[in-house]
Image 1 (cartoon, protein in one colour):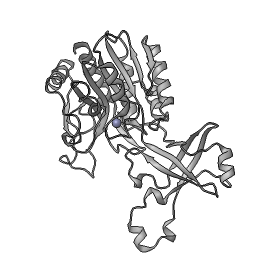
Image 2: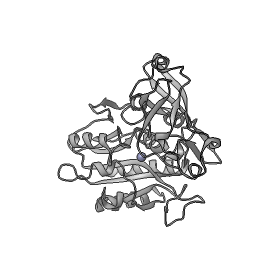
Image 3: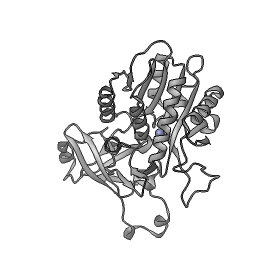
Image 4: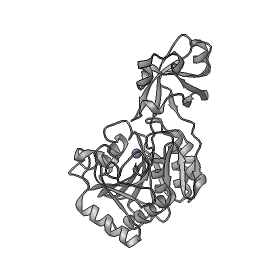
Length: 342
Ligand SMILES: [Zn+2]
């Protein structure tokens, strides 16, 4: 596994709708691998050797969950909204970085300390509306002079690292792992297959970028390359979340309790066969709570066969995701067979 590339992808900032830094890594790396690239109106990055009618599309969303500045007070403290599905508890007293026209600004999320809280307050979860960002500004004017604006994107400066023998930890593994996988698939890509970094997956019930691009391109099939919830830790039981690290790619048959994509049966059977051919174990998933870009593509036009293939990740939607390198590698093996056959 190319850990330098994986670290660069994880540490790049790409809060939904501001995916530019991730998009330029993808564009450059696709070009290095000899593919043609384009960035469409919606900010999706497309890469292919050649493209004709009804291509196969593999989409990996580039965006990550984060925050956005919504108000600057007279003392220079910032209030924010959440971008994507974030649990308020993961925000408490985190370090943050704010992307501005003048460069990156550092800050911390502040809130009332436990000493001052009333007994009842200590028992409650502090909501994000009771938190603020402290950038060290002296007042509003100073904050503005530092470059912060209403609408500035805020992310977490978590450093990527390797853990134990074969694990990795970092922010935005959901879904820079998917981005890494499509970059690996870019080597020896067949004709009429599009690898696509998609924008704004985390902020809609279903992904926005995958939808706009797939409507335009009318693929013969769509595979979302993403991450999924691993349940192999002390606070989850297999019947809550049956996926585990190191057990192979996760194939999502049902997303969002069948309100989202229900994988096309023929496509799913094909993926099972490709896994056998690639000699990789797979994990099958019926997901009640979440969805991928597949859920924004399956019902376009006259219906597009769609499925999600992903890598199990612990602590997903926090700034400390944990995943297994063998799952990344076996997903690449499986998808390599898939794109050569579909
Ligand atoms: Zn995702």
